[in-house]
Length: 66
Image (cartoon, rainbow, N blue to C red; front, side, top):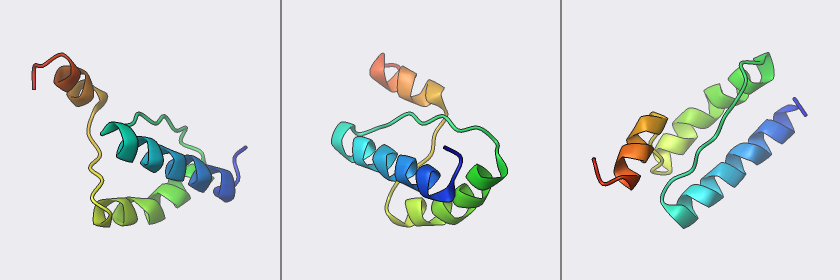
């Protein structure tokens, strides 16, 4: 579903998982609606204390390399 509501719901689920596990991995496709929702969500996520990092940072952390 490429609706703004669906993308927003998936981002909220990603936040929930990140709070529970200390990290979450999300994959998005560059559809116009996804980009629009991310444009609004990114400052909100930062204000809420979330930090976006490359997947390699999570892998290295899990392997004890970072």
